[in-house]
Length: 493
Image (cartoon, rainbow, N blue to C red; front, top):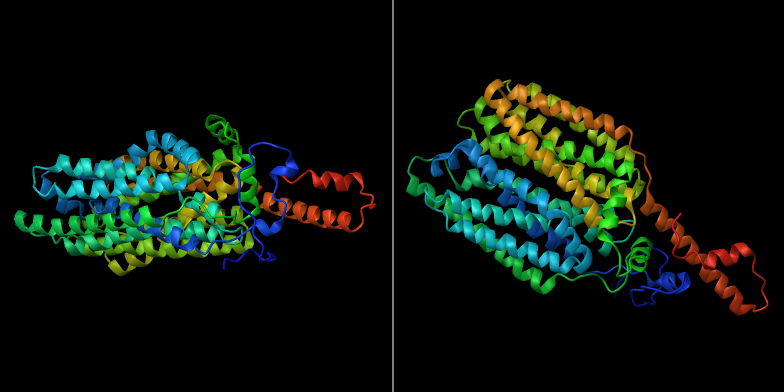
C-alpha cells in the first residue's frame, strides 16, 4: 500500500500526460491523485551507489598523486589531468545529455551513465604497466563522460519521485552518494596502494584496486537494468503534476535555456555555485600535494584528511536538506553556508603549516561541513528559482559553471603552489569565495516551486468543494471569482 501526502485518501488516479485541452481537463481533477511511491527510496539509493562508484574513480589518482607519478613516470600535472578531464568533458557534453534527459527521461540516462562508468573501470584494468598511461587516461575519460549522465540527476530524481516535504532531503541523499565516493576515493587508495619502490609489486596493488572498482561498477550496472524505473505511477507533488501537464511534446529545449539565462537570480547563483564548487574541486585535486609538502611521507593521512572533508560535508548536506524541507529558507541557508565556507577556508589556510596534523584534521572537517554541504543547496535553490524549467537543465548548467571554475582554479592554484607555496594558493581560493559570498547576498528568494505547490493545492481543493456544492445544490449561484478558481488549475502565481 502506497501512502500519500498529508490529507490524501486511499483512492488513486492514473498519472497521464495532457498535451492539449482546456485548463480544467489538464489539471488534476482530484487531490487524491497525488501519491508517494515506496520504490522512491530504492531508486535514489541505486542512483547514489553508481554515483559513488564514479566519484571514487575521479579522485582515486589524485589521492596518491606521488605514487602514480612514479609508477607511470609522468609529471604531477599529467596526474592532475586525470582529475581535470572529468571537468573538461562535462562542459561540451552537458547540453546534449540534458536534452536527452528532457526528451527520453531518467531511465535511459541512468542506463548510459552506469554503463559508461562500468566500461571505463574495466578499461583501466588494462593499464597495469608503467608504459600504459595513455590507456588509463582513456579509461578515465570514459568515466568522465559517464559523470555527465550523473551530476545533473539528483534534483530531477528528487522532483519526479518525492513529495514537496521531502524533496530537499531526497536531493541531499542523491548527492550523498557522490560525496561518499569522493570520501572513499581519499581513504581507500592509500590503503590498497602503499608507497613502495618495486614497480611489479606496485602494479599488483594497483590491480587489486582496479579490479574491485570494475566488479562493483558491473554489479551496479546490472541492478540499474532491472531495478531503475522512469517515474512512479502517480505524481508525488502538486508541482510535479503541474509540470507534467504543462510540458507539451513541442516544448523547446533552447527556449528553456534562454529563459534560464534571462533569470537574473539564477545567473547570480550560477556564478556563486561555480566559485564555491570549483574551489572544492581544486582543493580535492591538490590536497595530497599540499599535505605532502608540509608533512612528508603522510600519504595515508593526506587521504584521511580528504575523507574528513567529505564525510563532514555529507553530514552538512544531509542536515541542510532536512532543514530546507522544514523551513524553506533557501536564500538564508545558502548565504550562511557560503559565509561559513569562506571562514573555514581561511582557518584551513592559516593552520595547514603549523606542524600539527590533528589541527589540520579539525579545520578540514569544519571546512568540509560547509563547502561540501553547499553542493545540494545549490541544486535545490536553482530548482526553486527556475520552476517550471527542467531540474536536469538547471542543475546541469550549474555543474558546467563548477567544471569551468574547477579547471581554472586547479591549474592556477597548482602553479601558485609550485612557485609561491600552499599559503598563496589557498589565499587565491579564499579571495574567490569572498566574491561568491558578496554575490550571494544579491540573490532574491523567488521560490517559484513552493508558490506553485501552495497555489495549485489551494485551487484544486477549492475546485473540489465548489463541484461538490453544485452537485448537492444545482441551483447554487457562483460568483465570478468562483468561476475563475475553476479555471486556474494550471496557473502559477
